[in-house]
Image 1 (spheres, rainbow, N blue to C red):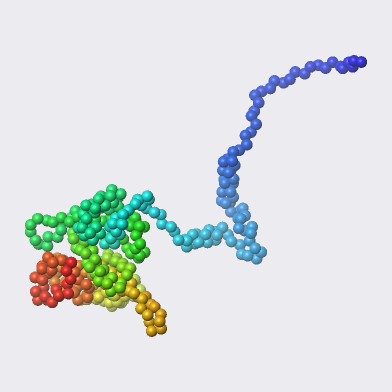
Image 2 (cartoon, rainbow, N blue to C red):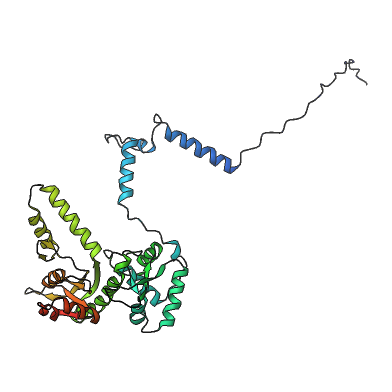
Length: 347
């Protein structure tokens, strides 16, 4: 049996244009970027609730974003900051003598190569020259040649080769050494005319430190006159600010007593260097052990010292040093006070 269906007019299909591609799903990176942008926008809008406000306990006072930021800054300021290692020290391998050179030069600002060869290298000049060349190549030290003092003498001018630290060398010396945090380190050459005198401070320290260690002193620290003068001036300024009408001489006497420095002829006598050290613990009557500390002030005299200046230093009670040639010149300047030369130690 056939079923006849009515004829239908064929319908023409509308022309199709280019098909658009389905939208691509955002990549994980784009989704993360959009999420961060939304979170940043929320943080910038003060009207939106803050996360910590949602968890606030009933009755707890509201903490505004401003207070939260202040508390966060205080907490971050109280955290100990880790000082970054200097770039020059990354991957740098130093020998023991090179470490000693950096720490000693940093403490005394300037040391002659002759003294380094004798003290650090036990007379091995070639080894010292190789190490100094390496440290200079790494930008840690500077080597200069300066004129020695003439002191009225004629003849050929003597040249002195000295070593100082660069700022990078000072930073490296701080990281590689086991010096006390209060130990100040110096960089750069200052007052070239006084270099010969300043290099002799290191020699005086070597002699004085041997005596201190024989008497049981440990953990030696050095304060140069730069640091001592700065501390004294700050103390005087603070005292004058607190009592403007107070007599200046009284202030100086008080500050001199505070720093255990001699007050001679209306002036505070400051040594070339102060050696601070710890003394061995002693048992008290109750059996308890108490630690103590001490210090020794040293002064280096040169032929350029005037008689009045020399007398003040002698009266100050410092341990005074001078080279043999300077002693001979000074003896002629103070013939009437020849007894002052009795306590001058030879470098």
